[in-house]
Amino acid sequence: MSPAAAAGTQTGTQTLESGHQDVVHDLAMDYYGKRLATCSSDRTIKLFAVGAPEQTVVLATLIGHEGPVWQVAWAHPKFGSILASCSYDRKVIIWKQGADNEWTQAQVFQEHDSSVNSICWAPAEFGLCLACGSSDGTISVLTQKVDGAWEKAKIDPAHPVGVTSVSWAPAAAPGSLVGEIAPPVQKLASAGCDNTIKVWKYTGGNWRLDCFPPLSKHTDWVRDVAWAPNLGLPKSTIASASQDGTVVIWTQGKEGDQWEGLTLHDFKTPVWRVSWSLTGNILAVSDASNDVTLWKEAVDGEWAQVTTVQ
Image (cartoon, rainbow, N blue to C red):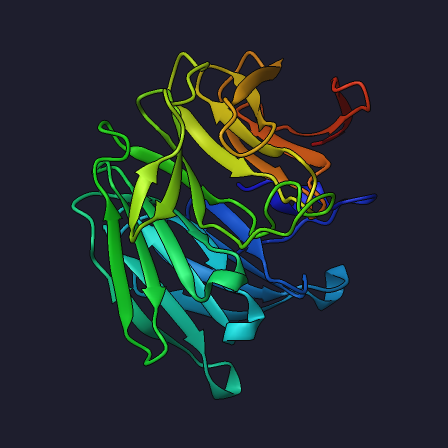
């Protein structure tokens, strides 16, 4: 499960009976924290209204995938009530809410030849734009145009053995808070079964690799990658989680600098997911020991664990 909800948790724990008939792979809160989407190997997606424990109710069950559903992602509410999902069945489905809480499949994309493992919406400044990473080694970028049609781009190959995770860079350019405000640039981070993290930049109408060589510090599959929110501070930060048991924090001082990797911690067990708080100063980590731990960077640059959610 995604530790995203835990990254903003202060106190208390609420247990939710999902109603899924198999393993739950991901969960995602909407922009306002009022609705929760979950997805499972039972091929379904469930939507909940989140409130006090006695007020949490099932809003809908979405059926459309033909295999385990790996991830769900809410679009920014400026585009309406839209949810994306990806599955082992090679499909990416865009779900849209209509009247009376009726959800329909607005778009079904079959751009990949193998399981689609990860999806991530771009910052709203770039429009309705979704990145999708697949076991076929490619990343597709799906962008809705003004006329409602979808433009499709592909990074091929991205990770030859398979893409496990994709994450967008924030729209705020590093250093914009303390220097000149630069126009936003589309960037993506991706992780793969080749043990590396790669950074991609959209320039000249194409996606190009923006880090040479790829970021290599892990010794096994990189399971997840998450680009930290940036409020205009001088550096860019990416977290990566690996089958090798480690989480690495990657930082880049300014555009064009080399990325530097610092091992946050060796958890001695595979690490599945990493997720940043909204302000980018707390990192949630979930591992194979069924623990979610929260980490915070001190002023001296050292990272320390602040709590454990069991």
